[in-house]
Length: 313
Image (tube, rainbow, N blue to C red; front, side, top):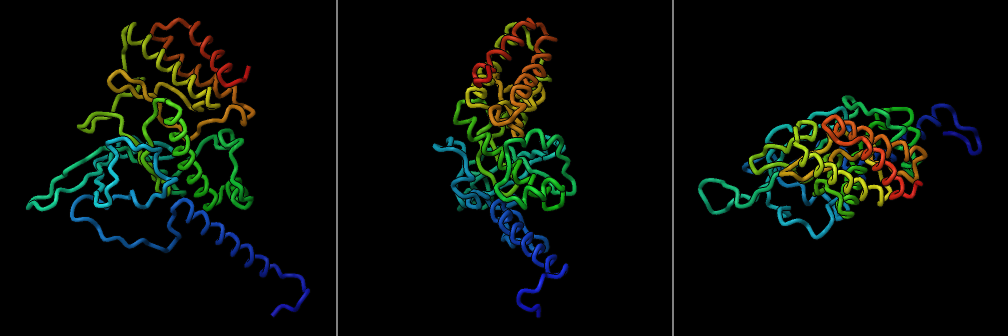
């Protein structure tokens, strides 16, 4: 036993540091819903589908803004069924998920009510590749200094913390933008690093096309630009820039433009490069419009208007 007042040995210090990191991981596991290494959750699966609904696994702060849209299923007896993959990415994959309430009292199990959602799942630390994290995270830091150090070092725990930050940042961004009136998918709930949101597409499970896939005529192009300008103005008025906007993360469903992929949303006031992110968003997507006949003057005019909306000029 170490005597009172004696300096700690290197082994003592290492043991204390390890316990501290374990405690920090436990706190993050509770916050973001991670399962600690070596632990597995026991579940009693439903008679049909892939799992029981995860609605009751989310707290009030992990569910979308109220009032909930009529299509959101909150029944605790609902079942989730994975129908396929919608999109793969460097940081996360998006799956098509059906949540349904089985019909009871029948010989054959059928769905009394059903809804389709997009399930965005951020990858495990070994397969995740976040790019330009530092630039997007300026002004967004965790209160726990040990977590910040772990993220800076890129350790396994640090990567897990980054994934949790991105997932919860996207959920928070979707919630804020939906409330502000921006055309984004409704955020249903978040559990750990899985984000469930409104599926933008048809009842048959066919996703809406990306803007990049369209060949609009002059009238449609003008209408899509007007919708884009309106949504970016709402973003700027709320103090945000998308941060990675292009024709590939804008969907068009029945003529309605929908903004997606917002985990890297930038606080243009708190981030010292906020104006650069705002201008780059407009420049990137504006190039797609001008290549299809939009007057380039509109691109520069929109950048200036957004800077005024965000109170940057």
